[in-house]
Length: 157
Image (tube, rainbow, N blue to C red; front, side, top):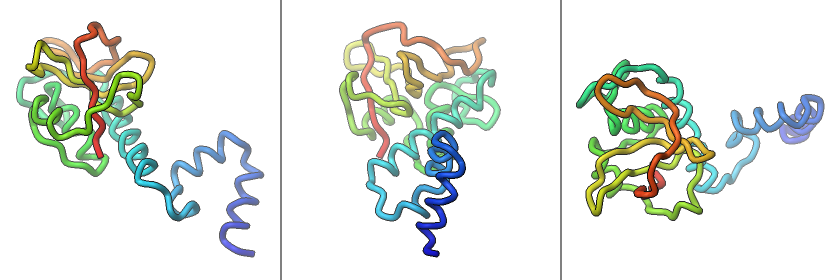
């Protein structure tokens, strides 16, 4: 029996949901030749999950984890743990991403809040118009609805 035949038999016994989970976990091992887009999706999903795992961590200006964060510190920490290095500030992170339209945003993309050309805040897109972010002094990392239309989106490659 080949490795792919064995994997196929195992996946059929596991059911659709479990098969999808297994494929996500072992993807490159059983699906050689994954595209760079699939790798980017995995990176973004990992970063999003890491940010979500920091729910309740307190805001601290200039902090980049593991227990306290400012906005860009949370995105930097999350992507670093997922395997990608980002610059330190929200504006520098915006300049280092591939800019995308709101209609093309995906979970794990960065959401940059701006006033004119000035980027003042960043979070990680969680889907359904919400972001994970570390908002301000006295607040904690949380999932929150995007509250303005003055946002730009960036994809980390």
